[in-house]
Image (cartoon, rainbow, N blue to C red; front, side):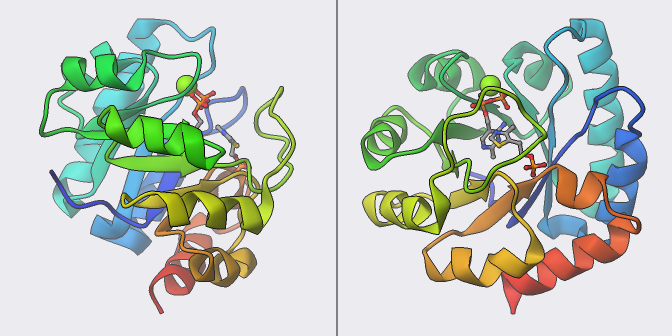
Length: 208
Ligand SMILES: Cc1ncc(COP(=O)(O)OP(=O)(O)O)c(N)n1
Ligand SMILES: Cc1ncsc1CCOP(=O)(O)O
Ligand SMILES: [Mg+2]
């Protein structure tokens, strides 16, 4: 199983955003510690997803950073990504593992210890745990679980826990103390005035 970076940048593909510019900036600061998860809007076509993911894989390669693809595992395979991420509305974790194969990184979403344990038993290599905080990036999420909820999951599993949802550099020490291995962010980098600097701040908080 490939090693997992601690900082996960999830692409912001909403209208008016420039996900590749943010990926370039983040890679320049975090290099191999960055995981880039290609996440597109639900109405994006597979071709659009493939084109974005292909570009992200090419940008990651010189840094030996890993690219994952959210939801669309056929695209992950087509672009030779390091793996994928699935949640409750996607392929079940065991099916996703069969699609991606034993060597791939496979993330699964969990917000409670029971779901987390089931996902790990089914083959998840890491868990995306949240939402930790309220966020405007994704609609329809359940109530935030906070640092306490992250701790409950981290204590229940032996795979890396990646906290997600409104995460900022300021919150990273508390999340790490709660057992989080890393964090996944959209807005903290996509909305930053200087995404490279924001990446460096997040990484410093994650690795110091
Ligand atoms: C690291 C990480 N954690 C959680 C999610 C959310 O996945 P999911 O619940 O399937 O929701 P969508 O992102 O598909 O809308 C994630 N993508 N990454
Ligand atoms: C995809 C997703 N799943 C749970 S929260 C979230 C969005 C995280 O974005 P942000 O870091 O901007 O809150
Ligand atoms: Mg999903």
